[in-house]
Amino acid sequence: MINVRAGGFGNSYYYINSRDPMFKRLLEKYLEKPDTTKKEWKSFFTKNDYPSKGIILTLYLFMEEPDTQPNEEIFNDIVQKLENLENIPKGYYSVILNDNLIDSTNALGFKESSLMRAHPDHIVKE
Image (cartoon, one colour):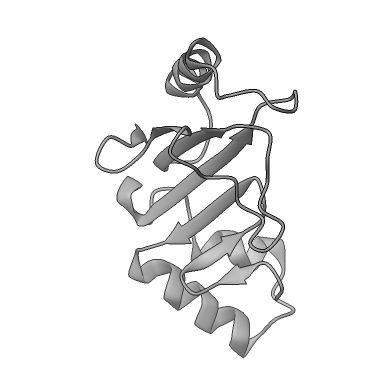
């Protein structure tokens, strides 16, 4: 439970938030019967059971070298590759490219210099 936050699940590299009621129903099913099999889960839920806006996934990326500001060319390349990527779960995707410093108190690196593609301009995967 250490990686669970108020609205979802995350770590230093990503945060995922479910916004569709379908996911609450799945949680309730899990709490009722945590030993549910993979086959049973597939009967409860398919990739078409929620709208794209039902999942928001934010990717937190960091520059490799210390004391390096986020690079716009690298950021644009990452965004373009994510936009063109196929066969990933549908959802709203955000990308944040930070410098190399991660705040040890909250495991985040977001600063004014961070480059971001996010709300209201998510990358939407259908």
